[in-house]
Image: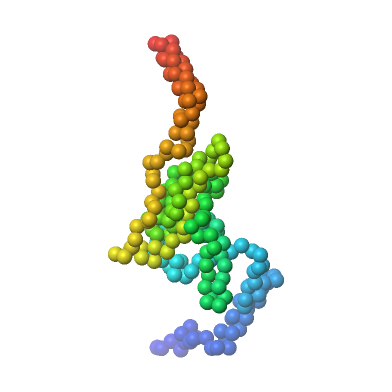
Length: 213
């Protein structure tokens, strides 16, 4: 006996699709008062981040680790974008001058190690490059720190291919001569104070060890 109920196999008519769409629109508008279903509007003074569809679907972008992904979004948010309306193109006014110091990364929730690894990954995958290697520490004694500056690169378009180009200025991982302890040890007074403090600590530890014995 053939099943005469073929309702589930019949495609909805155009009228039924419109009716279903209308119900969906009314439901959405009720949940989002003041906004238009057809063309959502945004404040003109609201800061925006511009990402192309090509970048969104790229292998380099989609293979980023969580921290690298977040750091890259921060970099994109630092760009000053302006539009050439005649050519219908967007440009970055401050590319190559982007600054993202370590203390800012820590304020954003990244450890120094996480931030360093993110910079390395973003360079390796062609998303950023370094234009100037800074030597400034967190709190330089005189003036402002000599911060590293970055470039939003487009080498990611070639990532995973034979045409991929390496970063022009990869981060020097072991160079620490102009920051942190290196700066303090160059100062004779600071060096003397640090050495004296270390010797005192070693002496106190030695006394404690003898007493325990």
